[in-house]
Length: 357
Image (cartoon, rainbow, N blue to C red):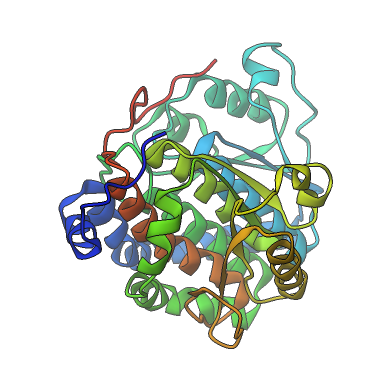
């Protein structure tokens, strides 16, 4: 595995960030979210009224890659704030096995940047024929997915040229937050939506450079989160793989004790995101336990957690914290990739649109 060149000063690594597509596009996310929230507000208010008048018995999400990690965020947000069971639909059930469950009284959330993946299209079409209400959260509004969906919620991220998705993933999280806020009608969530772009700007300005050297030297690591923070932990692990060639795996802070912990030995790298909320204390205790085992733990938490290594931005509502956390992380992982001699814009063997059947 490549490691960070010892002769390269840290300031030089950070200076390169402004030159990469990945960094520039991630920096555009606050403006993209502000435009998205404004453009989609009226449509979502109408949809929310429809969903409250006839609540679905089930929400099914369908996505691949980064979009599927956004779907994890949707699961926790919808189940905790609306009490509607939310499950992940396997696209291959429709594309490989030509089957599918009954979609009656189901809201089917198809999440995609490109809206072109054949298996996602097959799953959405099967769901629509089965009676589901298909809502496409898609960045390309002229895509096949947008054309077949009952309703389209544009992500509004604009063109994204870096293979590693950043602002389109953040836009998907933002759309899910706004959908949940409008559907639930919770004033505190609606207020958090309005302030989200400013919180992302603050998160982008945080200094996480101290984490670059230990992460750049890693060949493998765990990224841990829980609850509403699990989806961004999944996304972080993916970004380590595709931009840094680090074998990173994400787990819930609870699931890591069911087997994966057996791999943790002296100096094993662990990035733990202890976001605010009911899951935070358990993740803090896990960080202490793993340090006791000799693991090299980087704990990310807000500034009221004294044992933190990385400071998370404070937002208007804990449900927004994952969005701010991933924004800070993108600048870090881009710098780690550069420190390892990789080009984060052009990961080997990958392309912007993945065609799976």
